[in-house]
Image (cartoon, rainbow, N blue to C red):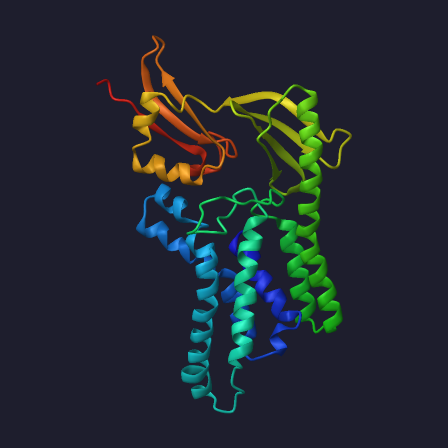
Length: 316
């Protein structure tokens, strides 16, 4: 999910009772909730495709999920001892055990929230590069922001702890509801796909639309192609498959194999869970470029580099 959702999740956990356990609990939970995104530093150290190949990998896997809470605990304890209580010795010291527990809780919320959307996450890096995705929540969900913000507003206005906890429960029940709906939608869409002649399904992607949590684009992956459709929970038609189809492409072609030696292509294909390839030609049939894309993202659209890349073919 986006940094705002991660940050508000940490803050909500604090206001729901975490901040009663130890000083600096809120800071600890917010740091933990955002910590796995330290992989964002690759924006400045790698190419754009090198960065997306690294994102949601190592720092979201088991090794870093164990190490990050220890680092956060050390930072908080040092800040408390050498800065906070030096400024005001009358302040109560932090409780390291609770700081670690809250840092761990905050850190573990991060991969869970990232799993909710179709971008996915590699939970098992570096032991496995397999992507996992909940296909349930768009990466930026303003309605979830509203629920989390309502909880924080109630806490700020000194509402009873029970009320704040009930609001927090509703806020966290919202993505759980969307996950449940996604699971049901997958089954409905699979039945409809078979009915309209889309056979040998390998996977179905349920991709919620921006600011429309109860509507989604559907992608049916077969061995040869990706078929596109639409799903809605609010209209009379639940699942509908259209005529748009993208072929997976000639992956064994010599030109494609040569293009795949390019570092940017290799990095892009790490990210592309539903990859396709196309060879563009002139009117006379001469190849001019090899184009790589991901069925989750439109070839021309707001997704930027995630939409794919084009490798020109020299005349030689």
